[in-house]
Image 1 (spheres, rainbow, N blue to C red):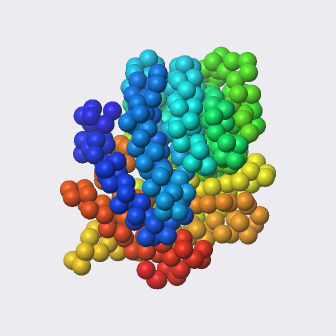
Image 2: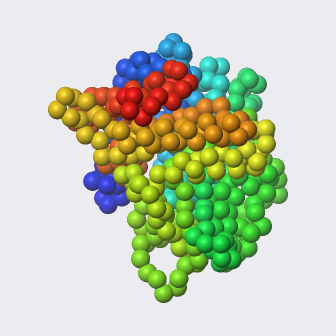
Image 3: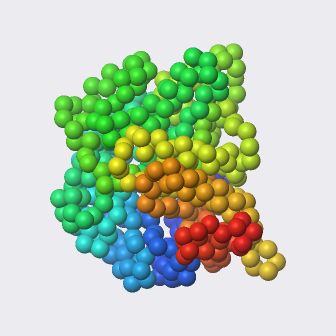
Length: 434
């Protein structure tokens, strides 16, 4: 996908990226220097099982074995995510996530990685942001594989759910019972533009398409009836077979929540024309199947370099929602962060006060949620380093550590030093204390 002209900003590819493959020891040493207690990383399915079938390539698995050993030697807990959108090409050529067989292939892959690392890694996540895989990959086409078929995107969503359930079972079949199995959802916080019935209905529709389509079967063993009604013109959901919802509804040990910004929606004005302000890339095709009657609006306030409004109240709202949605289930913030146009100054430093303020606001929101009764066990910043941001290429810098892409030199930003103090002390330093 990244090698297809026009698919990524600047034609950037992930071929080298930050070269963590070769530099992981110095990167882990940097984590230890910053006092980080855990490192969340994703395993590349294509590195471990290039065709998506058959035995593992041990050279691919060996990298993750070395990485885990290095982390543990520095007292850093590894947290493994099995799928972060990189599907082996042969499986995509066979139909990808809209095909049921892909879920079974994922379960085999999950078992392979669980057998290799499960004795040393206690925290596991099956999928990262399946909404993006399904709807940005198969509906709007802004992410791999770049398809624009809304009906196929709904099939993909179901088979990703099935992959989670089958993968969770596969992990548990080969790992110690002490290990934690979770999923990371980029749940949207949809807010209606007004309290009119039409705007409330628009927010409900987006809630179903962003959240209910995943947490419904994963947490409750059922899709929302309103989702079936809303999408009836696209699909009859005949690919949801008997027993699927039971397979998907595996007991979770934790739930990962990824949050960046809320969504402000209303009923669409049929006479209005213009770009869709949902923050999910530029495409003539919507990532929201059967939601052409919904309009997205820019929320007021300061924005990051992604154009996303900074609103920590959305994170608090999201945490409290899932505290109610799944009482007793431990929560992790598995992604939260901001992109800014960071530069190295004449002294060789990178000063990013905007990111420090962003982190202070959002970590404060997490603390408020804990005070309000939420069981939040951890927080993972997106991201440790600037990196390849999919269709945005290298143009968006989310890292607390600056990467010079020409030399691959790493430079901790002022936010990294602030975050290190928070990690070491468990307290939030003043915003100026960087």
